[in-house]
Every structure is written in structure tokens, then in C-alpha cells.
Image 1 (cartoon, one colour):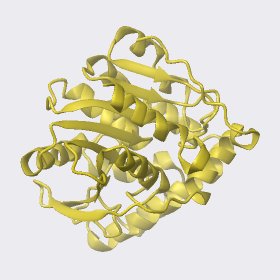
Image 2 (cartoon, helix red, strand yellow):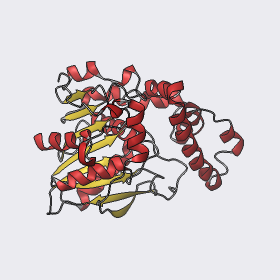
Image 3 (cartoon, helix red, strand yellow):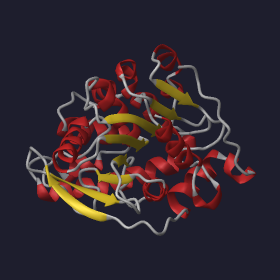
Length: 319
């Protein structure tokens, strides 16, 4: 499909990409969402925590929500999505990726941008234990890349999955990594690295034979982290191999359900390869919206309902 024309035109302060990103990530708060936690055991003996919220009336429609790097199911972009979806008759299952629910996961491995095996197990669990003939996926940043890869590599995914929305997606992980290492993003990169290293030191204490403090101290950049931990813990050769294998860009041609990608032009985390214009033109199931503004997961909206939250409801209703 051709590009989707965007009508997003926020107030002047929110036209600044960095302000939008920071407001969404640090300042915004969402109240009134009641979540009930369910823990599932994965096939490798690890666990995932799922946070459920429900429409006011019994629903047969479910949206699976997936957070971004170092996020969780309580981030405002997740609870904000759940709130408006619940209000519009959708139940929501918000995934806390491995190690992101407030408790370290059991294994040395963790989550990453291409860990679709975990999403596969969540979908299977829901199909086996709940009655949702209509399921949608919505992901942010890393979570958006994850769901697009899942849909592309599982072209015959469950017929219950009807569509998806992916927001601020690093479709090319290497392109995004290069942007995150640029001067304009130094504060974001340092924050991500600090959080990741804190978790890695917990892994060091749990698995002292896998990694040493000396190795951790050599990590100076996010790419170093992926070379030292992400690639080795998840059976990739190195960071570049991880980026190449897990970028959703190569999987977009195989997606067979309506899927909307919303990537702002002023998203400082996304490089040129993260805007899949060619892929969208060739696949009638793909829709790409590239608003001028929005930053990274920073789409402001009136009444504390973001532009992309409203857009997701409209898109899912149209399928």
C-alpha cells in the first residue's frame, strides 16, 4: 500500500522531537488502568509475566501489547494504550519481556529485538487457555520490531491474529544503533546503557561462570553491550550478526495481515533504513505513516490520549 497521509499536528512544544520523547518517557502518567498479573512458564523453564486489563463488558477481542527497550507493562505508553482499548471494547494482554517485570528471569539469556519465540509462546498460551477469536498486536520500538518480525517469519500465523500496529520501529537495527551512538542521542544512550548494565551485573551474580566484572567494565557503548552480552547470550556471532538477523525490515514482504507502522520523521532513534517505503509499496498488507512530528514514542494527544493510541483503535476497528 502507498504511504498513509498523516494528520498529526501537535502544539508547538511537541513539534520538538526530543521534548516529545522525554515527555512521553518521563513526564506523562496514566491512571485508571487495573491490571491483573499472570505468570506463564516457558518451554525452556523460564517465565514471563503478563499483565491483563479488560473491557467493561465481556469481549472476544484481544490486543497483545509489547513494550520497548528496558520498558515494562506499566510504562505510560502501554497503560495508555490499554486504557483506550479497554474503553473501546478490547481486552489487553501486556507482555513484560524477560527480566522486565521487576524480577530477574531465571536464565542467563534475556529478551532482545528478535526474540519471537517468546511471543510465539504467549500467543500459543492465549489460544490454549482463552477464547479470543480476534487478536491484534501492538508494539513500541523494540516491541514493534519484534511483532513485525514475528508476523513476517510466521506467514501462516494463527488465523485469530487479524492485524497489528507498530510505533517508532527500528526496522533496521544497525541503522538505529548508529543513530543512538550519535551525539544528539548521548543522554538516551547513556540511560539505556546504565539500566542494561545494572541488569547485567545481576546476571553476573547469578551466573559468575558466564561473565566477569572485568568484561562488563569494558562495555562503553550499546554496541559493546550487544557484542559482549546480547549476541553471546542468544547465539549470535556478534552485534552486527544480531542486528542483521533480527531486523524486521527483511520480514516485511511476508506479512499477510493488515499492519500499520507509524514512524515520525523527527524520531532521533531511527536511521534512514528504518523507514520501509519500498517494502510498503510492494506489500498490500502494509501501511506506513510518517508524521513530521512525534519523536520516539512521543505522540502527544488531547485528554492524555496520544495520537497513536487513537489511531490504533481506528485501525483495529477498520479490519
